[in-house]
Image (cartoon, rainbow, N blue to C red; front, side, top):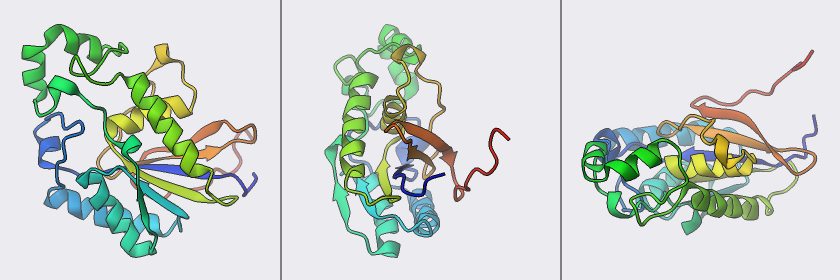
Length: 215
């Protein structure tokens, strides 16, 4: 296996009170709660051992503060990029799943079934989020040295859409990946033909190199 391949690690932010309440945060700027701050510190301690070369983050506070825990341990500056924000969910932002189901039953049913419809009636589609996420990740990854690692701190829905887009999963097959837990991550490695391969998903421990696959 070539050691010159670039890697991209997508890290979801730590827990917020709205996560616990099943309330759609979208692009509203919600803080981490005490549990989330502890999760960020633990993730920062673990991921610092990977010696990342670049650190980028959504500019929303829950992501910024999660990125800050890693920045303090690595000395890396954080580049903030609005393209790493969560899905803009229009009228759903601030509502619980129960409230969304009651007020927007048809739209919620379509969204939950995986249709590429705008979140919250007037928000973003998953394909729109995937396109902006992928563009940001490819752009930042291009700054890496050979074999370098980019850590991108983002949000659950944005990470899912970005991963599907980066991996070239046909839209009709979304979602084939589960979501990410708070302060869990997915690791992509660049393939020889410039495709991206998923090496770790929804991980909360340090990745290990695959040895002897297909043998």
